[in-house]
Image (cartoon, rainbow, N blue to C red):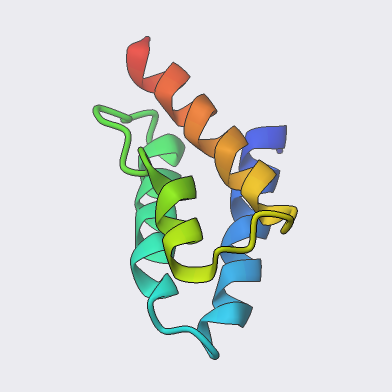
Length: 84
């Protein structure tokens, strides 16, 4: 499993746990799952998570949370795959 896949899977799991307390995370989780499905099929035609860090911060305003780095990494990698 690549670092991208690991980070994506772990981020989805972490957000699902937090979703119990914040239902607005559902949109972010759905976009991450869409990316996962596209990546598994090598079929990334658009970046479904563009702007995901901002969306997360709009919900939580938690700039020190390490998940921000993971979301940023995933967004950059998805953009790189999309440009191929």
